[in-house]
Length: 505
Ligand code: SF4
Image (cartoon, rainbow, N blue to C red; front, side, top):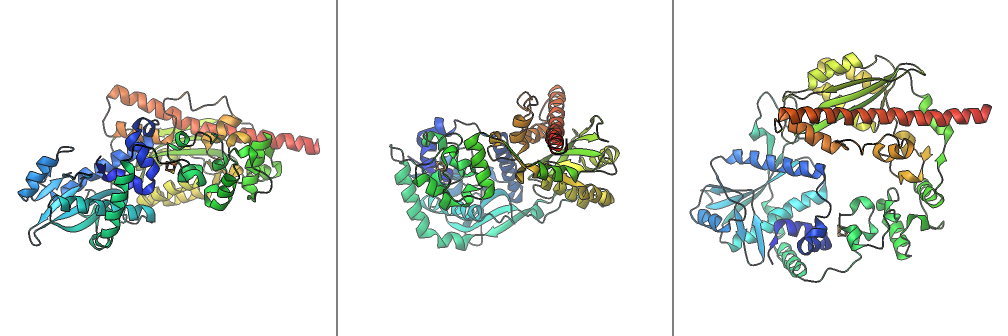
């Protein structure tokens, strides 16, 4: 069996998962890639391809063509894209190899679609291991290697009229870090090959048994069929308190409804457990009244859709800056008034900033509360819009000053329902509180799909007829996001109203 670089990197994260990938691909792929993961892959490919322009005139190897690579390396071909190297045990495709005539060695460039200021230490370490894995495989093929260079997107880069790829890409020489790993990597590669070549699965339970649900990979349920769908792993932020989770597991408590009273949990966690155990709803009308009482009419329910382009597409944009291509705005001007719906969708290949700002200035009431769900996102989009368009800065600052987060009612646990399962996303709250409204009937059902579909229109990847269909789907999706907020707000208003009647008659 040949272990690829990807297999090895997955092995370093989780040996169990890597084994399932190689030996039970039908289980590993049981859940297809989400639209979001798919878009990340596409972004990665686009960045890879663009980085080749840094070293133009190279030869692109066909997938898996180690023989052609060997011949070109023997000829000291100056630049190779995706060269493939194999040994009896390992296989790897490099991103770019560049011959350095001065040192008479090939410099190895590994391209990543991430920004240079990322503070994700695990990912940063994985990048060094990524380069370190390639090194012995290339050496075994007789390739003289010079420097090991990590190529990422410079987070400080801001595009002018033209894209400057030399300023966009950031180079970091990791040769020393790779050299320091030489013995470690040899040992780890041997171990990976040994364990992953075994025909019998690594024993369950896997390590994620003592991690929160968000850490689980798609094979968790397969490996741990005894863990119920709603388990102790779903307790809010339980992943941050590993001791508590470990104690529960040690005591054989898996179902969230079986969590005993003597386990020390936070108030938030206890509320979730109580709701699951009793099936009862807990409503703090005082707290909800405080939240709703802070709102001022006209109420404007706002939701943006954006596309995070890895390669800056327009002037003023940097790597992964979000392109705000759509908004939905529902306005209720006074108590008892109906909902006025406004919407904006930019479908051209041009920068949407100015058109969006013109529309928003026209549609957004000058006073009153601007209601969002997870305000950090909408506020952040407004801040970036203001930075790129200083003439709109005071308008956007005014909007941000009026932003209120409806999600706070749920994250503050003023309303706890067993059906929320401890989650506070609008997709978790809506089906419980307003079951007649549903995303499941829409062609686009979540934000990641919206970004992918919009990009298809904006890049001309689909026919005009298909683009019109997608545009209609996008409008329906974003409109439901604001409609959902309106209806959830109405449910909360109703609770407060009934409570007032109960209290004061
Ligand atoms: S759930 Fe966690 S430990 Fe289990 S296979 Fe997946 S990543 Fe590995």
